[in-house]
Length: 301
Image 1: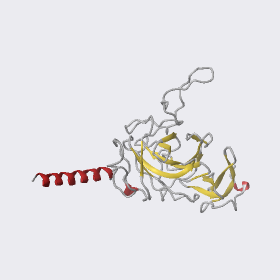
Image 2: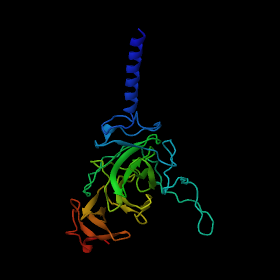
Image 3: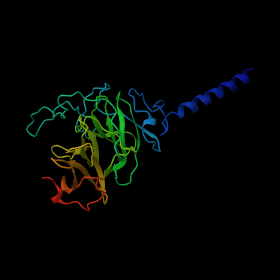
Image 4: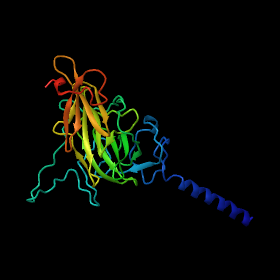
């Protein structure tokens, strides 16, 4: 009898250890974040609501981000073991401190939490997404991701419960190297393929303003893993709801619409080495797919 009980106990222990080991990573077709490493206090969008991506899921904890749906978007965070608070002003060369700049919020209207309509899949250079689950962001959802943007780090665009946007840079181990708030837009529609358009270390984010017009912005991933906003003063607003991200020989170009009293035209921005500048314009219709037919004379101003 004792020998029989010992054998039953051994089998039970073996089954228990196998069950525990199988919960270290969630697969891309999982429908929940249960079993991921560490306690998951936040909730991510169900896997069924995003395109399926092969590979394991990176469980990401965003530094300096509260767990409530109205947590403010942090500023750029450089990789360090002592991450500064986004609300703490940094001293200048003279030792003085100044109040941190706040991202502009849409005036006169509350931030929307309604799901935005999917954006057309951008014609970006070939690349894959990565599965990301957020461990500390209630009400947040992962909008789009991109693997290996620069130096082995991936990008993840996150929409908070209050409609704010966050752009993360994530290592292969799930550690966040940098995070920056995306202040351009009240909502962030997901690309049809779930992949964030990125090339040459830069990523373009598509946003929607409260009136439905598109607004695009661009961010560059630095060697330290922090993001740099290269959107200029006002980013790239469109006069209509239409916009596009175009692959021009491996570089990302930004297409938005300008409109006066007559028909709208496409305005194409290309990277000039340190910033985006207008290359030219093209008549309304399908978004341009190349620089052919783009001319400065077609612009309205």
